[in-house]
Length: 467
Image (cartoon, rainbow, N blue to C red; front, side):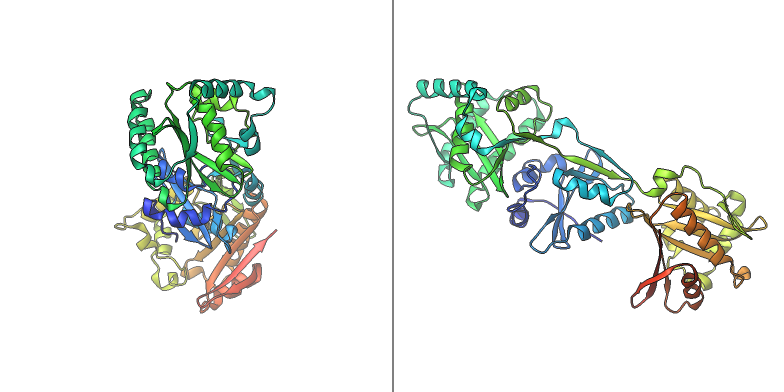
């Protein structure tokens, strides 16, 4: 099980060790974004399979970043852990801000998946060289503004901002807030406060910062973080009363800090009309997609009602209220259920009622966590077959148990094979797995007759059936 902790300022060194060489291009794969939007996205992190795994909670939805691999990281193993986490927690699997270069991998991984890429969250990505030069007719507007700025303020000089500029920064924030037009927007105020804090950790070396000075007065500033071949620009602020300072700063910043990268990412526009207009005017090389992948398991995609399956001797269908006595007898047989591998009573998390186990089976199917079949002989329920732990990749686990008085007649094998075939050929799954305790000779014999043994550990033998 993955164990997450909320991202804090103290976690920045660990996050930076992954993001420093990350070439996903998107702003979310950076320390600055995780810190600046901490209160909005509520990000948490852990390390597993040599990867950084980040989980966020946004508008009550749990979403995961695409794993960021370290030097020996295994992204597929990290994805497997994320899938298992969601299955164990009973939360939908959702991978958000997936970079375009990894989208194809997930398309192949998940047979059923909803994919979206909302325009609002696309990052504006520019070629660094073009931002340094503003060459050609398409940038004539920017060049005119810069010329006017330099004419009006010939003493303005762009230089690096360092921790030694603390007092100058304090004065800038005071001046900026006097011109701040979004003081009634809580999100904008929050972003401004975090921007101040990022400038407070310049001594970490994570960021590149610079601005225009007129004497000792700072009139604009920007802060960015190099991640792979991209410079993620987290902060761009200027005193609007100095006409033309904004395009002048954009160019000067690129010239000073963008020579060792291919791209400048100026982040998304959050559906702000003014930002969209401004960022579009700088002619982005492309808008970087942030894909959201929401895989669905095979059961959720294909099965609205529990079907009826017939074999030579048996009928398998939905467990009904009339089956509650037989179902309770099956579930409460502790002597036989020691081989089941799951404590049904403990799993309730509360007192056992007459219909407790029936309600669990009903609820699990409604949520598409599992499908429980009643195994019937001449109409009477004599056991159950359960398909569960759907892994989003076309696989699930199958278990079967039969009442004591009906054991030894091959009913379990018959029911098990029928559900396995239904899963593989009716709802088009690719893999059904099963396991049995090493001491359980009867189950070993049954599974060996209809599946292929694939592995073992100290406790179990593992089997699978594929198509």
